[in-house]
Image 1 (cartoon, rainbow, N blue to C red):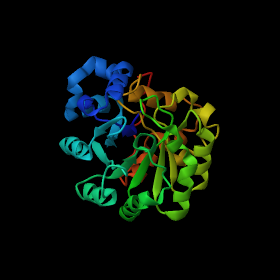
Image 2 (image 1 turned 90 degrees about the horizontal axis):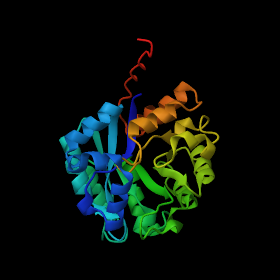
Image 3 (image 1 turned 90 degrees about the vertical axis):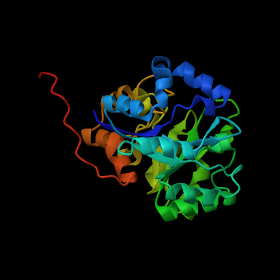
Length: 286
């Protein structure tokens, strides 16, 4: 089963807050098994390719007041080492970067292909007007913006900033902006995220951090909104491998076309990559 992982993080423990670092080490079999080898981008790319990944988005995490500070410069350098596999997403902080919109423009000029924002870790509401210049750049440059929308157990998280209702203003004020709701409203807001994805043309759900076998419980209309869903893993901070999660989604009672959209085609379209045909599944009787 081939897939595009829309949501991975670099393993940079020294750049993480102590609570985040301990959480990743506790939850991640990959960290326990491979340790410092995960700092090698070529090694990580081969691990993920062996599980079926075609490409992987790597997310910066510029959250100096909470989860950590994995800067975009670090992510750009990682992705340059395996450019045919990794795709870098920038991160800017509306509270600590003096000119976040200008900084985002610079990151895009340096090779970033998307933006990750963390309202609950960076402490801002997505519809605050002071953040709008960031969206103006993203809309102009036609890049997707991935928002952390859902619960978190990391220290210093402030969940009030994650309510997806605050994204609704963006659909009105930035009609061409691609908005992806990472974690699909995990814990509180599944219905709200499903409604927004179904009713706003440029809104999507990223199912990172959700138990794949329970997706239909969270999103009963998953087959109907399959055009608006992308697969992500949160690797390496996950208890199972991306390949296992992708296989669990493939095993859901969904049409094959819906599975293909969720696991790879939607992501390739949003990232403006050529959607090469998926390889046929191996014949179990061969």
